[in-house]
Amino acid sequence: MSLKKKITAIGLLATVSLLSVSSMAKSINPKELKQTLSQKGDIEGIQELPVENLMLVKTKSGQTYFVSKNGRFVFQGQLVDTWFRRTIDELSEARNAHRVPLEKMGVKLDELATLSFGNQDIPKQATIFVDPNCGYCHALFNKIQQSPEKYNVDFVLTAMLGSQSLLESKRLNCAVDKSKAVIDLMNKTKLATEMREDCDAKAVQKAPIVMGLLEARGTPFLVREDGLTFNGLPSDFDAWLEME
View (tube, rainbow, N blue to C red):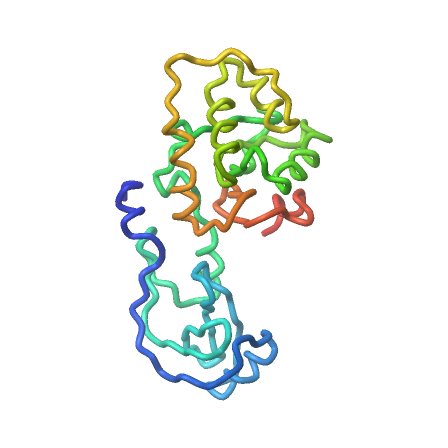
């Protein structure tokens, strides 16, 4: 499926029928939710889906249903992932739905404003959407600059924080010397001064579209090579790279 078609069909297609509506409070913790839903059968597990406020619930008797995060709405039926053309009705499938490898979505990094950092002799670990003026992005930059030999990542320039971010993203993307552009991005310097005359600003404008497809809520937004995503700054970046 082309990127254009995916933009038209953002998200997951759910074919569901409403079973019950309760007058619960607006928020409910997982323990309370599990106790409430146990009336439908002993719960084997609950897995949050990459759909805002929706979780898959599996009972020990084999029944699958879907519930809003506040416990108010319960749905039963088919949940179809239209990106990968598969039905989601198991806990493992719900967990895997959080993994969206960019290449399988038809996203080409050479069509985005991308800068590479780290040790090119090790396998690439992640693609990270960043804004040049994002504080959390610079906290991540500071972390990985301490041991550059341990990492191999791509940064996708994404102007999320206004006109200054857009201007800086375009400057970094159009720099002739990409190594200097990476240093400028990570350290807020201005070493890259020579610009390509044929530079197309459209590459910078595509990144927010891809982030919208992935339901990213801001920068940094991390996509591991196996498709695992993370919104924000991981408390332990190394552990996130290694987690199952």
